Image (cartoon, rainbow, N blue to C red; front, side, top):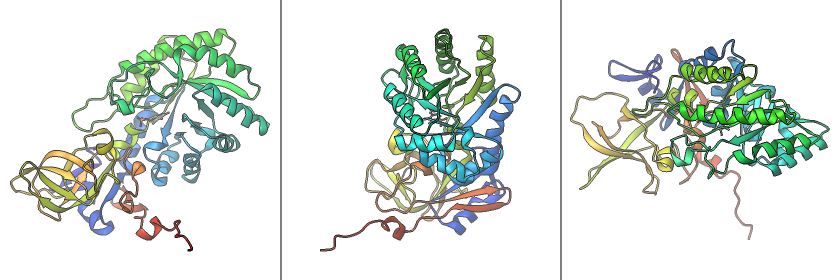
Length: 420
Ligand SMILES: *Cc1c(COP(=O)(O)O)cnc(C)c1O
């Protein structure tokens, strides 16, 4: 959690200048709360390190696609990394520009390619030969040339959770390193494709720079071969994946990360190429918290449970990746703490938010689940017919509702029963 954006004032957690307790009163729980200042600071760290360096930032929309969040970045001139035409529509609705969007994703449909081409996206990151053919056909039908880069799988170990590691041979992502040169040659031979760059994305929540440098060295080696084959690689997209501190991780600072990569590229003689960064988590993760209220305390022989009103449908990361999120009281209480598993009301044993947490609690207390800005709301579902949470953006002393809480009727509005 960004310490400057989220801090205690007289024992009460605040988001910037606004008390989290008052937000929960006003808007109810579970409630996602984002800090504009934390978003801005994280983006600036990237943008400042890129300034004057022929490098651009493409915000990975999938980490947090709320329009207000995207708009904060769009106002600062961000580009975007999208993985669906739905995300493209969000970018445009949030004031972003298609010309600054790169279209990633392993399974783009022909319809999505068409939408991307018609909107004029900056580049398609293509992941297979069949996808090259499909894109070529779509571009032909529109009388256009599609700008492409190939997502190459550099086969490096990003040393992160297996579900969020994407750069190994065994992953479904990218073109295998050993096939990349030949795949580029195929792309070059297609009339409606324009080879413009090279791309990789080796995983997420990466807390060391060395896997990036290993991946870059392999990419740069490939660039030489591709150019020898007569193509010109104008940009190198290094993907996203920089980690954040959830607990005691010590990822590199954003500015150091950017500078180290750019220096590395320059030192190897590739400084003339534009470098794209595609950060998601490191921009939004610590800019958000999820507020939840304790419904019941349930002491047990082996474990005490704190049953809260947020659940795995609101924040899937613990259930999905056994991810750790710090959980802190909204109002600090001078009482003896006990060890609790913090769990939701959903009918699954996997529905937990934190295990073995030392907390002083009474029913009705508010808790903040920290570092919930990335892969939080965006992964939420309606499992157990639970309406999804509201989202708030705090800006200084002001708090604005940026997504209404769903209501139950909306959840089955598109359903119908058989007529007889
Ligand atoms: C998910 C994703 C990102 C962002 O990853 P983070 O770990 O959130 O920084 C960037 N690029 C691509 C292609 C992705 O799939």
